[in-house]
Length: 208
Image (cartoon, rainbow, N blue to C red; front, top):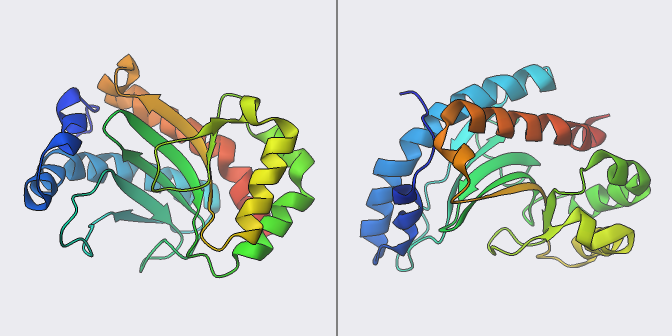
């Protein structure tokens, strides 16, 4: 399958009532697009990393009652999983697409990663474009732009990531559901690839 972009029907998936109905729509509408897009992105990240990276598509297998509010693909250096490693994500809520380099709370060495980043905070400020956004919780839609956070806000975000058990650190881009780029598969994949390349030095800081 060729990835031809996302459309409003994909976003409308998250307005469907009921776990089974929404999951069926995710599987039919969105997951094939994740597979097509993810294969390309995984190849690109493998070249950047110099080692094989692996595609994971969220299954939402633990859900028994509540329908998922979002869904995603993740790319990590481990074939078995991604949550306990820094990883790259692309996913959808009902009103936007997110493109993340994600450090979530399951990371066993979360404090060490945060300390590393705090020690490199001047370099990180230079690395991340001002229109990129930060989230401290992958379950929530809300994010804050690097520009609005400023130097103090970025430092406080990393300190929270270090000190609060459930705190996370996700950095990347949001693309609103009505953005024309989402309807052009090639242009959107190019945008995601550029975002991952921009963030890759941050990922590499942990592998030096």
